[in-house]
Image: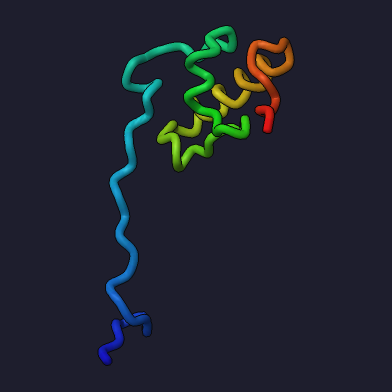
Length: 83
């Protein structure tokens, strides 16, 4: 059994290339009134999808979170889905 330099067995973890931010590429604004766009970044339970999964940059992920919270506050989208 061969050990690597760091003392672990196996080849290690494979890293995928990060997807580019959708909002940086399209130069599209994030609007809290656009419920269809915001639903793409919510799970079935109504939680905001994390940045590492959605592929957004830090700046746009923060804007997206604020937009989702505003849309929830004025009842454009639900806080949580029904079971």
